[in-house]
Length: 177
Image (tube, rainbow, N blue to C red):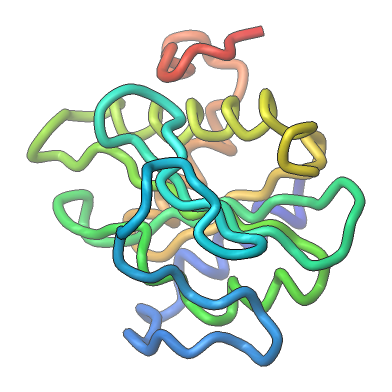
């Protein structure tokens, strides 16, 4: 937990990522504009627009080339809680695929749509969805790490610090077991 919190805090304090779409060598390529059915596999190792809850609460899932249950880095975008999108994913995170990690890029409700703690509920709902679908996608449900920049780093920290607080768990997306 301490290591995950340290990574979260380091990324939360890091400067905003470059808008470059270049990925690390041999990483799963960055997502392309939506051109296929939601939730479909657009290329080997990439599932775009998987619905973890109703509405526009979607995530993209980048899988490593190696088999076996993969740890998951959950990417939470920045944008001052009022703007932002799960794409593009920073190259440094896509590079984790080369190291055997899956990367889940998550959209959450922005403050123009919903107020706090809706964004936190969305993050926790996405994590529950990933754990509930771990077998389907080859994920390790016991090794899920939250990372984000700016507002995303704040949400990652909040999620890590409020685990077990029933008032802040929410019921987004179900999978409450």
